[in-house]
Length: 311
Ligand code: CP
Ligand code: NVA
Image 1 (cartoon, rainbow, N blue to C red):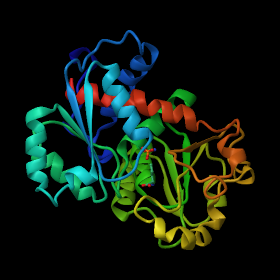
Image 2 (cartoon, helix red, strand yellow; image 1 turned 135 degrees about the horizontal axis):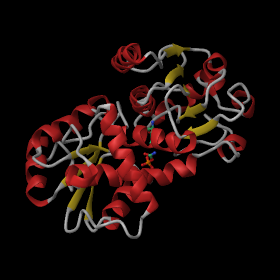
Image 3 (cartoon, rainbow, N blue to C red; image 1 turned 60 degrees about the vertical axis):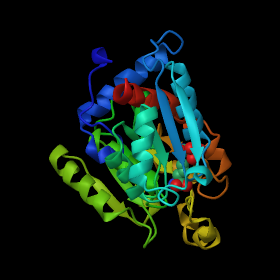
């Protein structure tokens, strides 16, 4: 992969560890992989990816497995019941063993610390496939999709409406790195993590962009170029679904809310979506929605990440 450049990191645990140039490198490779999917060189020939998943998945699992196949490698899926990370065996030992058989690890875990510990214990690249705190593969893909739509992301305005969760955090990281103004509207007590907000504000200060954290969804989306939402109750918080449905009722993305954004604003959601909850079907399936393009792009962006880290 020397022709395509190198990343400044050896794992992808958080977008906050990347530089803007890293993101452009990933996007360049992803765009080429997307353009030439069938003829792109098998840069991961004979490489093996271990996939450790403590939580459910459709998109992440399929795109990593298909991505490895596309690039000439194979993936080994291990679910939580088999490995019981940190319970049956210390994380350090799991990471050390996998490093002797495989060339990369993608992990989807509850605690963010688990992915960090795996990265510390492994001598092969570790990719965060979602933790309670972050979803970097998603955040990178979201901005790749927006860059495809807009051409240039600098100066654009992105609003996240809803729970200040893992998806929101990684979107904040990625959008800030790529020069966007970011607004987040969440109910009190559900705002994004202060570490992520501080990172975004510091970077925005250097880049001359703006970060706004408010509770009013209507104010947040006024004049923006993208409205983004995600489920109100993330995996692991399902028992709060009813309570959150009441708390978040004003944060539903409707056609009326979309109407407050710029006329050519787009809608994004990481999926899975709960129709009629955080977003109405008319918006999710409507002409402004790029959710399936975004889901497709998970494949191209993650292939680029794997090729750059494992190639
Ligand atoms: N967006 C996303 O990560 O989807 P899955 O949970 O289905 O992997
Ligand atoms: N915030 C959601 C994202 C799912 C892809 C969750 O963690 O369940």
